[in-house]
Image (cartoon, rainbow, N blue to C red; front, side):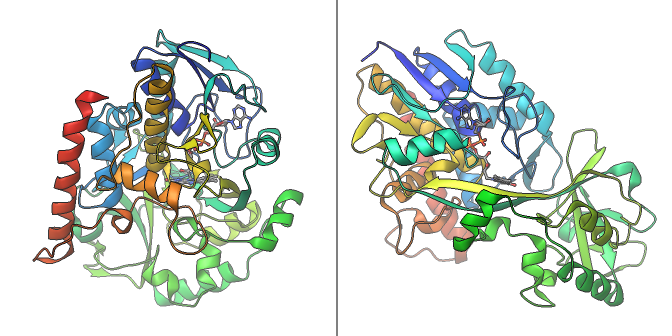
Length: 442
Ligand SMILES: Cc1cc2nc3c(=O)[nH]c(=O)nc-3n(C[C@H](O)[C@H](O)[C@H](O)COP(=O)(O)OP(=O)(O)OC[C@H]3O[C@@H](n4cnc5c(N)ncnc54)[C@H](O)[C@@H]3O)c2cc1C
């Protein structure tokens, strides 16, 4: 084995976190990234750790599963969490970031770390004498995906994900739209576009009748086994489930009062700040697979967006992930090739924070392997550990990517009075106690 060097493939959320954790332990890291030479269909910037869809890293409360994961990572020195806090934009109780500042913060840190060397190249094989972390993401390039499937013997799966459009703030009609947060919680960070019943019906009919984009050859093949992940379901697919479905989802009006009229509307479309300056806003929950002209036509029916300028249209892409249970260990290394680690969405964790979390575990343990130190397996009582256990063992039935959630955490084994929040508070405190005990031994 080559001494004290690891390779990390992919400078996304997982790859950057993995490279950082290994480098911080004194290991030399070669970080391979195919940008700017080659881009996936969802990546556009030459910076690292690009957020390809929403700019939200979701809830900030430790009684929320992803909020707990973030707190665990923050306490252990996660680069991605540090960047998120440095570049956050107001978003009520969520942790949302200015995506440009976020990526450039991480890129600077990685490029200036004395133990990290950047190699701008597409990778498509692995030197198994060198400990390697593969973090090439849900849009891993075709050649690498083929290598993983055929040469490493991992059976890959594919499904679809979708991204929401972004509009220019100055083109939003604020005579109609209004600032407010649901139930007035926190600052009034969201722009809300209210609809009457008649306006909703017109929008709904247009949406369910709109033309979807053509699928690429590869995606058409994969569509035979089309699975739309619930957390990122295209708005038109959700709408087709029934007339009222959106009214209980992204167009939910409850708790959003336009002070000018003093009551709730029939439906409300929310827009969230996309950058610190507040010049760009994304349509919350409007991931979509409609053609660009159809997005313009249908979304311009939303009151307040009649003249909206679309800075980016929504897109829909392939998502590749491994059938990880039995294949990967609880530190994300291959059971039969311990020098090969995987990290990020490709392992079957789902989401930005979760991808970074798996990168943390994989990078730390890849470094420990070359240093001859014992593995650190995070216990299933912690959120970061529960995810690794889920990926390595699976749940019941077919393996599907999973967001952080309390259902995968080791149960307390006793009842807590006072409802869910009281229970999750106890689970979170147990977890953070464990993390505080581990963090100095990393
Ligand atoms: C369209 C889309 C929308 C999504 N929206 C959200 C969302 O809103 N919220 C959320 O929480 N999650 C979302 N996800 C899921 C997931 O959280 C993100 O994809 C996340 O970026 C995954 O992190 P990662 O590090 O695994 O991969 P990535 O961040 O994609 O990083 C992989 C990196 O590897 C590089 N790469 C790929 N192949 C090679 C190769 N062969 N050689 C060298 N480099 C290579 C890529 O250029 C990229 O920089 C979305 C996913 C997709 C595809």
